[in-house]
Amino acid sequence: MPAKIVQKNNKKFNRVKLDPITLDVIENSMFSARWEMDAVLFRTAMSPGIRNRVMSSQ
Image (cartoon, rainbow, N blue to C red; front, top):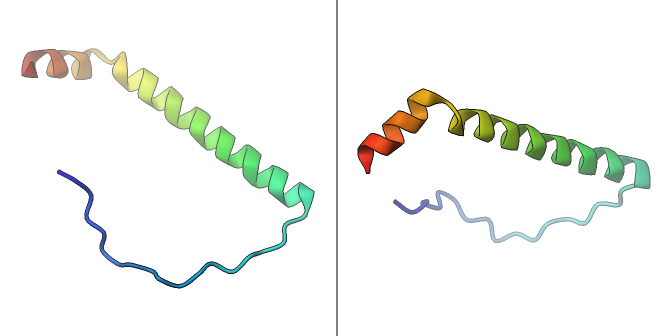
């Protein structure tokens, strides 16, 4: 089932000036969030309950 776009935003984004420290904080927080999502996905994929459910549906 494809995603459904609920609302379109045709307005252009305003450019914001960022200092190097703020940019570094944002970049590192995004990296950390990605690392956490990967870790959760890995732990879930190794879960016997999930693995058995996937194998039984094939």
